Length: 116
Image 1 (tube, rainbow, N blue to C red):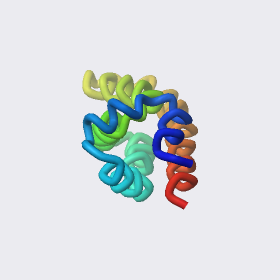
Image 2 (image 1 turned 120 degrees about the vertical axis):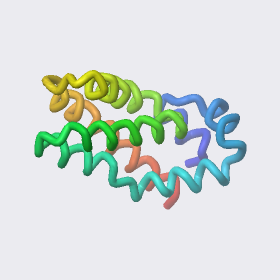
Image 3 (image 1 turned 30 degrees about the vertical axis):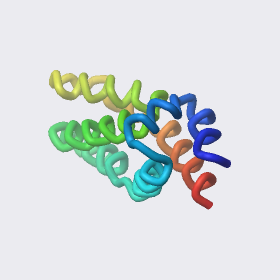
Image 4 (image 1 turned 90 degrees about the horizontal axis):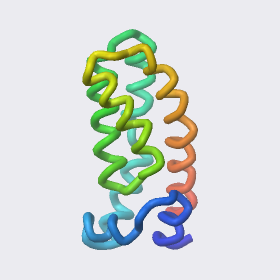
């Protein structure tokens, strides 16, 4: 799979990502780093423990990664959760995390396929 095909699969704008990150080598470097990302796991743990301050920091960082890498589909629920937690609202956190989880793992699987 090419990088352009990867971005088509994720319903993202390849050209926008290249404009933002300059070249494919840099995009691939950051995609590989995303595989080692711990922010989603840390978000889940913090939310389960009721530590919404830490959950907010984790989801805010994940939001930045999603926006930088062009993960538009994933960034929507991540951004919504970021905004909710920023406003101190926690009642929908579990639902957002449940929505984020399959999208997050799907993107990581596609990155593995791309970089294999």
